[in-house]
Image 1 (cartoon, rainbow, N blue to C red):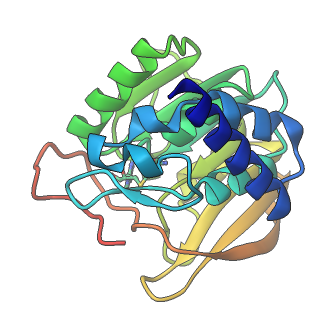
Image 2 (cartoon, rainbow, N blue to C red):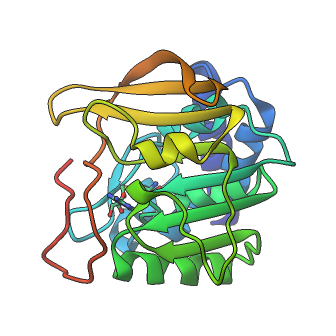
Image 3 (cartoon, helix red, strand yellow):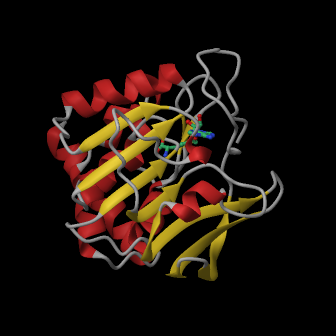
Length: 228
Ligand code: SAH
C-alpha cells in the first residue's frame, strides 16, 4: 500500500511539472504534504490526482495545480512572513508552511478553522498561526501586537473587483499578493506587486473558480458559501 501511495505521489509531481510548475521547492512541498490527510475517507483514493475534491458541507479542496501555481506565483523565500485568507481545510496553508518562515491564516468559519488547526497539530506544522476572523479586514492587532506588513499575501476566495483595501495596506512595498477577482461566472487569478505605498503592478495569471469572499465570522453550519 505504501509503495502504491509513493507511486501516486510521484505521478502527481510529474503531472504538475508537465503542466508548467517549475519551482522545485513547491513540487517538493506538494510531495511531502499528505493531501489524503485533508480529504474525507471516501475521497482518499483520489487524493493524489490533480483534481479538486469535495470535502463535505459543500466545500472543496482546490486542485493541486492551482495550489502549486499560486504558491509558485508568490515567489516565496524561507524568510517570508505570509498572510493567507481562507484557511478552509488547511491544505494550502500546510504547503505554504513548508516554503516560508511563518504563515498567518484567517478563516471566517469557526468549525473549519478548528478542524484545520487539528491537522496542523497532528502534522507538527509549528509555524502556522490561525484565527477565526473576517480576512477582508486584514490581520488584526492581537494583545497589542501587529504582524503587518506581510511579505506576501494569498487569498483563496474571490473578491469582486479589487482586493480589499486592508490587504493592500498590509502588504510590504516590494511584496506580492495573489488573489482571484470576479463574479461566479468568470474569475481571474491576479498578481498584485506593491511598487510604492499606493501603487501596484497588476497582472492576470489564469482563469479560476473560487468561492466568494464573504464578510463576518460565523459558526452557522448552514452558512457555507461554497457551491463550486
Ligand atoms: N485554501 C483552502 C480552500 C479554501 S475555500 C484549502 O486549501 O482548502 C475558501 C475559504 O475561504 C472557505 O473556507 C471560506 O469560508 C473562506 N472565506 C471566505 N470569505 C472569507 C473571509 N472574509 N475571511 C476569511 N475566510 C473567508
